[in-house]
Length: 247
Length: 373
Image 1 (cartoon, each protein chain N blue to C red):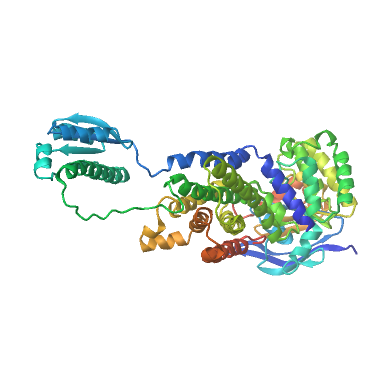
Image 2 (cartoon, rainbow over the protein chains, first blue to last red; image 1 turned 180 degrees about the vertical axis):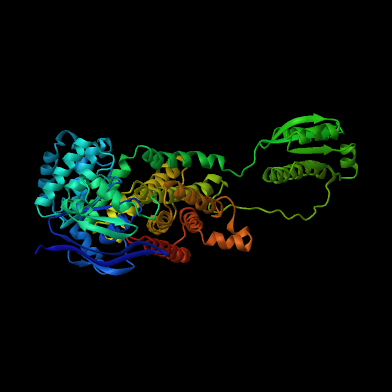
């Protein structure tokens, strides 16, 4: 039996009459790469925001890293990392300043921070750029850096919201190498994506349609279940019935 | 505490790195403080006068010469017909027309009384009123000169006269810069506080970094405090440069009252206006929105602050608005302490009100800033 790090039970978020996330129930295990798929407007971001403590659920229950999403949101925030598609580092700070800032606010002490940032910069091969403003880096590098910063404080779970949007295939591949590294170290990766090749890299994936989770299994099992050769077609099969218009 | 340090380092670095913001923050207020008091002057000079002299006598010429050589008037026309001079008034080429009637000298000598006529161009109200006042004074002066001449001949009995001698306290020479500089300094500090503070937080919303901050364990009040403190420091620096550099060295205005009192009040004032900036930023989604809202409030703060017009002479409803304006109170305190040397007991009411503003705006802003939805 694997350790459960995220557990939701009939988690629901309503905005007025609109039910953005409808009674979703799932379990995510430690060290797993969990793909969170769905068309635009299916409710992925809302669900993710609830799990990150940014949004209070309307009903249902959920725990993240063992903490309750209603009452222990600040404790959740200490145990997670988060990186969004919208670039989340400060472009007017240098690479090293960004690392130190985000490390610092998670409470890393100076010595640990120095060692970690040196290691991180070396790992990413950013030595020549360390003193440059982040705004001057190419998008792919920024995203790799943002991911590394998001897991700098060794969170239990890292949430990635379409992290590779607009990134070239080579950099995307490198980005996924970083994700595998993190998962190997025991960090659970919760990732949303629209790239079906990336979905294949996940241990398990869930498909959201119109606020519901319509399928949840490993990519291989899903392909078998729908009797199709690729994840692309699994996605079409499931999303075809969607009532909501994509935004 | 550690978190605070990282946040402050970040904020200062970002502000100091902003090449567009920095000159705006430091240079613009100083330049404005140097230039604005010179323009914001109630003293009226260069009043253009047209004189219609229907008498062409010794006395009338004496009067015209007196006008011509006074510092306040400029003779633009000297004619024989009122219609001709009135045209100048119509063209805005003259502010006043003085008509000296026929037989001015004869009536003055024989009857010891004569009337002159002044037509005023009242489009520019201040200039018109001040101009006709100055001209009346000049006429009274002229009157006195000729009557004393006669009195010497006639040994006329002395008529009792009340003369008013006035002394201007706190600003002996009625120098308007004394009155304006402290007030303008206050509005400049206000602008820096309200604009910069409101834009700064909205900027993080716009580029999306606020979301990143919201998923971190940073406490709400730490984040907000780290946003406010740099601007409080900048406000202090700008105020000090303005007070000692510009007001002191350039205009020769040094505070008569206690500087502790001035700075004590400044701190409260900064807390209040930064709270307003913060409040605007919590309601705005984009920098454009924040700028527009801040501009709207700045206009009210400026015009309803008693900077240009006296609050006491406003109608009751306007006086109420002016009293709800933090800038009004700081301008009044500045004028009282810096120019008159007022002590704490005279301004404690303002202290209390400013404290109220600070608590209200900041409390409201913090309540409205949400990390979660």
